[in-house]
Length: 252
Length: 245
Image (cartoon, rainbow over all chains, first blue to last red; front, side, top):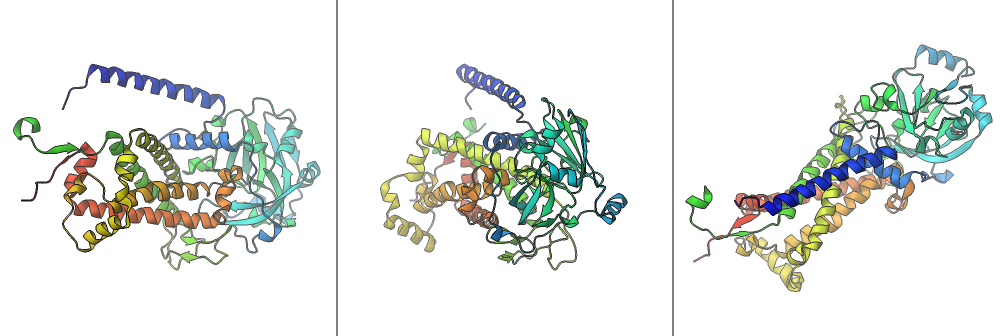
């Protein structure tokens, strides 16, 4: 074994120094431009941060693939959810007439909207694929109100960075960054395949985020909260998913 | 100790440091991808062809194992524990390790002439005669060519180049084609494969081909001298075999 020469030591030191300052600079830039996901800590944080940053650089404004009507799945599959709460069953018995979507947090005009109110704000329909992290998928037509229109009505503050959204089902909540929240295909969905959105698929109101896996498309949405930081919600990881071991960003 | 006690031996350099480091990083990343990929398959051990596929549709084929989801009809009376959360986190982190390692290897391999010297080699390595000779040696189960300690034979080069230039790129392509967000920006990657479920099925087969390569690779390393070859890939040095009398 030859001893490490002085030249090697100096070169090595310079390379290590450049590497560390490079990482520090990359970290600053990533935070500045919102390229760090809320679940960036821990063993899987580096991989998750690379994935999210790469996706945000490459796909900030791209549109999810839409399909011809002939490709709509004849027998779409719905994942079972926990048995509905008593409150949900009462809404269901009343035909969801009293269902309300509350928009609060860092907005100029907090709102409380019925499904009919949502319909009057705007409508978009699109034929997109629901993709489950397990591997299966189906195509459906989704009809709803673009989330961006509702956020416009509420007047979202400049410094808002995330939109948290909550299901009527306990402990089922998620959040997305503003690239997805203002994305034209992100829909507050109340219709499917030319009819009302069936309860099994998330009716009366489901958040459809077609550029991410199915678990970001939370069913039975009752509340949206605009915020500048996800640290104040749950364990601060961005959604219920990372608390159960699943990634916050599900665009992969 | 070694330098004092043993007389000078015919020992020579075999693998450059960058080859050894990227080899073992790739090994670590690939094992993590293999284990976590298997865990993810367990949550839906059915494969389809085309754009969509779910339990209401006919599968292309099914792997007859129990699933970690009770919604998948497997014929087994029990459900495996759900390992998808950490498996997915680790799968994508390992994929980054693999891609970054691969990029370093490609740049260093081109810059140092490693590809030209060791993987492409002389044009006469690529003749039908060279293939025939190497295959015949293996069929006759002839003793290992002593030159094999210092250079790759034609079949070896073919296998390594196929892994580097075909299988790994295909694994990355078919994997990216499973990302709904990536597909939104670059729909060609999934559409060219015939749809999302086709991409998933191909990803499974490409992984299988890589696993097959790993099996054959380790077997041949064992047959040609496990200790000597492992030592060469770890320390970079190899002891030359005694000249036959």
